[in-house]
Image (cartoon, helix red, strand yellow):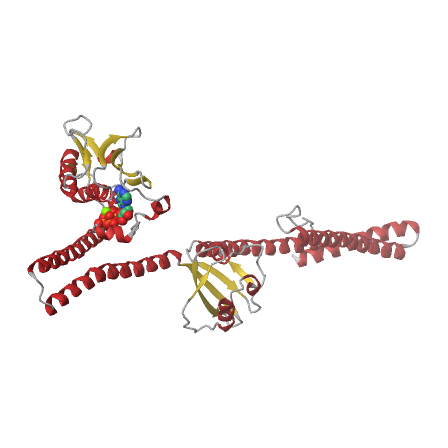
Length: 449
Ligand code: ATP
Ligand code: MG
C-alpha cells in the first residue's frame, strides 16, 4: 500500500518535471522548467494531504463531541493517506463501541438481577457516598436512588447505630444484623459488610416488619394462654387446699365441688378451642367436593341454641321445609361449619339477657353469595371494640365473659372457618340494642340438589 503510494508520488513528480522540462525547453529555460514542474507536483500533493488531514481532524473533533452515534458516524473517505488513517480509526472506535455496549448490557443485566431481589442493596465508597442503591434499599432508607447518588449516606440516614456500624464494618465481620426503624415506617434488618479493600461497603437491608409482628403475636399468644389457664388453676388449687385442711359440712362441700367442676370445664373448653384453632391453621383448606346439607347444619344449631338458652330466650329459626333451605348444600368441612355457626348462636344466647330475641336466618344476596345470619337483642358491643373482636382472646368485658365461661377464642375460630371457606364474617352491633353477625359464603360453595 505504502509502496504503491510512493511509486505513484514519484511517477507524478517525474511526469510533472518532464512536462516542466518540455515547456521550459520551448521557452528557453529547460532547467527552470524542470524544477518548476517538480515543485508544482510537490505543492499539489502537499495541499491534498493538508486538506485530508484537516478533514480528518475535523471529523475527530465532531466524534469527540457527538460520539459515534452522532451525525459524523463515518470518517472522511479520502483516497489519500489520511483517508486510510481515518478509516482505521473509525473501525477501531466501532470495535470499542460494540465492546462497550456489550459490557453495558451485562452491567444492566447484573443490576436488574440485584433489583429483582426482595432485599435492599446499597454500595458505599470510602467517603460514605452512595455509589449505587437498589430501589428496595432506597425505599427502606427513604432515599431517592437517582437524586441521592454520591451523597453521603451518613447525612441522609442519621441513625447513630447505623452510622457507627457503617464506620466499623470489616470484610470478615460476623456482626449480627441490626434492626432499625425504617424512615418510611416498619422495621428493617440491616447488615453492613466491607468489600474491595478500598473502604467500600455493602449495605444489605430486609423488611422484617411482618416477622416482628408475628413474633409479638406469638409472644402475646403464649402469655394469653398461660394467663387463661392460670386463673382457673389458681381457683382450683385454692379449693383443693381448703377441702384438704378444713372439714366442710356436706352442703358446703357440694357447693365447692360445683365451683371446682365449673373451673375444670373452663379449662376443658379452652383446650378444646385451642385445639380447634391449631387444627384450622394446620390443615389444608376444605375441598369443594364435600357437600354438607344446610338443613342438617341448621337442625344441629337449633338443638344447641335451645339447650344453651334453657328456654330463656325467644328464638326464630328458618323453616327447614322452606324452599330457600331445602336441598341446599354447602361445600366444606361439616364440623368446621357447625363449629362456626354454633359459636355465633352461642354468643347470641350468652350475651342476650333472658327474654331477649334471637333470630337465625339464611338468605341469598344479589351476587349469589349465601348469608347465614344471627341477630340478637342483647347487650350489644361498643363501636370501638368491633375491629378487634375477632382477635384471639379478645373480650369486650373480661369479667362478664368469664362469668359465662368465654375464652375469647370463639369469633377468631368463626373468622378462620369463614376464610377457609373463601367467605367472610361481617358484624354489626350497637351497644345496648343488640348485635348481628353474618357468615357470608361464596356462590361456588353452594349448590342445590
Ligand atoms: P368463647 O366463644 O371462646 O367461649 P367468648 O364468647 O368470650 O368466648 P368470642 O366468641 O370470640 O369469645 O367473642 C368475643 C367477645 O365479643 C365476647 O367476649 C363478647 O364480649 C363479645 N361478643 C360476641 N358476640 C356477642 C354478641 N352477640 N353480643 C354481645 N357481645 C358479643
Ligand atoms: Mg363466643
